[in-house]
Length: 342
Image (cartoon, rainbow, N blue to C red):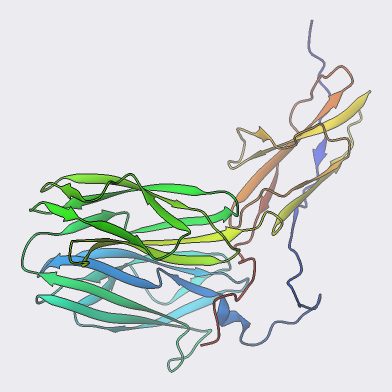
């Protein structure tokens, strides 16, 4: 028996991500002239390179994110510390709302012992005397090859729903000599380490894997670090971490479509994909009787692709409708939270 093909429902091309009113905020509040500079964030907040042999070069990832709606130009950087430099940063850089820019901090110790420095970032939302962003740099020059490399040097978890978690894998690689790690310290309870049993000894040239899990506890941007230390508490390697906690009610996508003209229509199914053209996954738990649907399971910064189908009383389902796209802006649930005036 041939399957009945129904005319597809059509998703409206206009998809509107909705945002809740901020607490104690007027509905038509006008942004202040200083609001723009509260939207630029650098991660990690501090950059640790661990132990590096004198004369060798070690790179760590730095990410700058524009959490606002307007373009911001990164104009200049002020670098302090003779053993530190940057790679992959070509100024000026214009960051659109929600856009990230990634480059590297470089540590090349010239002598043994602790070394420190800093980077200040100047944008058109700041001034030379009042930089919006800054970060501290730390490293230890050594005369041996007890170096411990970490990959990746920075884990960016993006936006994760509160009540959920996201995990990423990393690895530690020893230099020319074996390295013993006594423990690991996380600066935030939202990031937990697994996959290692301390103390752990990594043979020369060998590697050891580990896992970091981000479980957000609040709607906010969180930057942290996990330090792998020796018996004296000296950091051997530092994993920089950042992620955004997101309430399920923070953002949503409102969908609407034209009713199917086929006979005996009893409802509609809504499908979503992270890729244009699918594959699609049905997101409505039960048949939707209306020609509208609100998707509340979206994440900041992601782009989604939607189609819908019509279902008749014989439980026959139409082919997919045309595809509609929705991009969720990368905005913090509480803009400016933790990003005070500078």
